Length: 141
Image 1 (tube, rainbow, N blue to C red):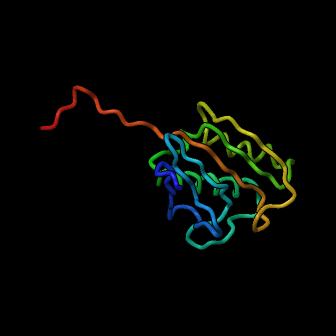
Image 2: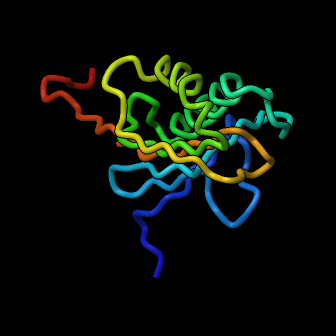
Image 3: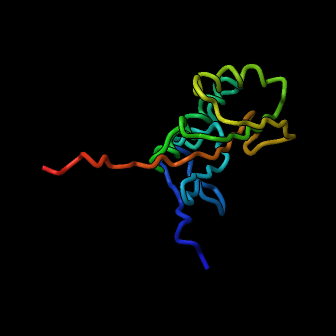
């Protein structure tokens, strides 16, 4: 039986899923984002050959998925960063810090032997879905 609380998220602002997975799944108050690669959603091509450019594109793709779900980068509670080379950590971290200047999420970073399309970085995340609460003073006209 499929849970009605499990809602797939699809965004044209991130690369389309190229296999049997969703860009993200909203379940209860959380959004679980699949790993994003530094791929331009319009062209399907890998962006850049350096870690800074690729990290920037990955974070833009995550932002696109989260915005389609009604959330955003500021709501991320946990990320996992996959690096092809841990020597790229300082430069990746510099770009990453620009996107999370206040209250950065929990994070794990691991080096992997290879990533899809031979990219340098992939990031996945879990974000909280903000609750919109109507003010008791607000009344329709």
